[in-house]
Length: 340
Image (cartoon, rainbow, N blue to C red; front, side, top):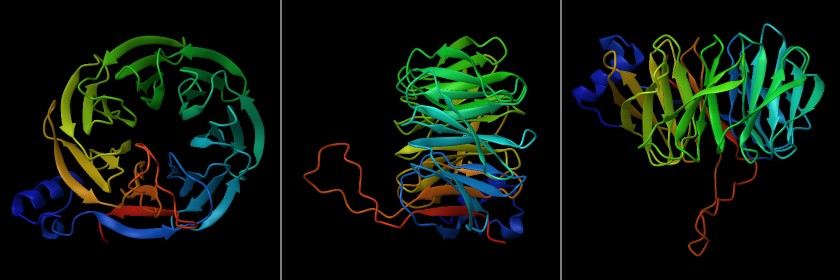
C-alpha cells in the first residue's frame, strides 16, 4: 500500500477519519477460519442480530461476528444467496441447483417451507420491504420469480431479456438488477411487476455486483472488464466510470462512510467515494486475498466481510477458464476495517 501524503489524505476522507489517525488505513483485521466443505457465493449480514449468512453449496452456515458457527439451514442445493426481513422474522435462500427458495424463521433457523421458482438457477435474491415481496433472479431461466413474503406463494414472473445478476432496491418499491448479457440495469416496479426501464451502462461489460446509495439515489455496478459504473437511479444516466480490480463479483455500499467497495478476486477492494454531486473517484485500494470476490458491509461498525479460501495452483496445461481447486477445510471469512 502506498504511503505518500496524497494517498493518506484521500484514505482519511474515504473513511471519515480524523487526520491524527488517518495513516493506519483499512486492512484485513481478522480472518475467521471457518473450514468445512462447499463453495460459496453472496454472504449476507443482519446487523440487528449480528449474524452472517454464508451459503456453502448444500446448506447455509450462520456465524456471529466473531466467526463462531451458530447454526445452519440445511437442504439448500446450489445455494447462491440469502435475503431476510427482521420485522417478519423470516429469511429466504436461493437454491440454484434445486430451483427452489427455502423459507426459514430468522430467530430459530427452522425451515418453514420450500417454494419452487419459475425459472432455472435462482441466483441473486432480494426482499423488497415496501411490497413485502421476495425476488429471485434466475440465471438460466433469464427471468425473475416474485414471491409474497407473508403467504410464501408465487405472485409473478418477470422476463429479464438476458441473464440477471445481483439486485438492489430503494426500499420504496423500486428494484434494480444487472443484466449480464446486455450490459444493462433494469428498473422494476415491485408493485405492478413491470420492467419500467432498461439502461445501458456501457462501457461496463458483463455486470455482476450491484449496490445502492439510497440517499443520493445512485447505483454502483461492477463489470468483468475491470470497470465500475455509477448510475443515476432516476434517469439511468451513467455519471461516472471508474477502474477497479480483476475478477470482481460484488460491491457493497456503506451509508456511514459514503463509499462503495468493489471486491476483486485478484485480492483487492477498490474504494469509490463521491467528490461532488456528480463526481466520484477511486479513493483507495485495500489488499485482501485472492478469491475474495463477494462482499457485504456492516453499516453499524463499518466493517466489511469477504469469503475466500486457499487454492491449489491451476495447472499450466489446464483449459482456459479452469477453476482452481480449493484446499480442503481452508474456507475463511476476512474482516476488513480500521484498526481499533
